[in-house]
Image (tube, rainbow, N blue to C red; front, side):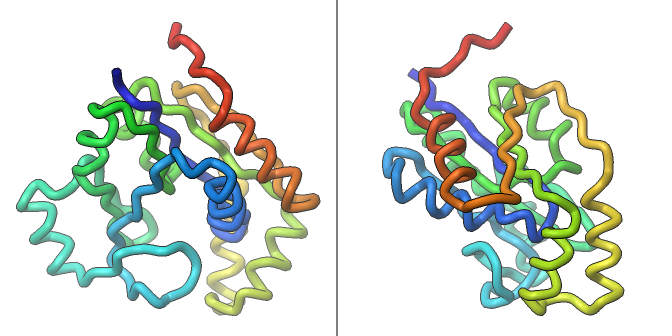
Length: 183
C-alpha cells in the first residue's frame, strides 16, 4: 500500500513551518522530510540540511534526490528516501515550492498541496519581525507572495492570518481524514 504525500507551499513568512511543526506534534504518524538547500543550516526558519552549491551538485550527480528545483537563486532537494517511505505505506510531508509544482505533480500526481495563505499586511509584519531580510528583500518577497498560483494537483488552502491553532487544526484535519480518490 502506498503512503500519502503532502507538500506545504506558501510565501516566505506565511508560517508554513510554524503550522506544520505544530500539526506534526498532533500527527506523529506523518513523516516530515527535511529539504537539502544551498544555504546555511542555521539561517533560521525550517530545519534543513544546508549544503554548498558544490555539495548540492555532487548530491544531484549521485542521484540523491527524488525532486530538486531552483528558486530565487537557491537550490532545493527532497531526498530520494521519499520514494522508499511512500512505497512502504508511510505518509510523508515536505516543504515544497509553488514554482516547483509542475515538477512535483508530474512525478507525484496524487500529491495533496497544502497552501498556507496570510493577509498581506500580516505577512509584511512577520517578515519585518523575523529580521532575516533587508527592506529591499522584504519588498521582493511581498511582490512574489501575491503571484497567481495554480496547479493541477489537489489543493487545500489553510488560512494563517488568525489564531495559530485554527490553522494548525485545519492541517491536522487534512492529515487525519481518509484519502480521497484521485479522479
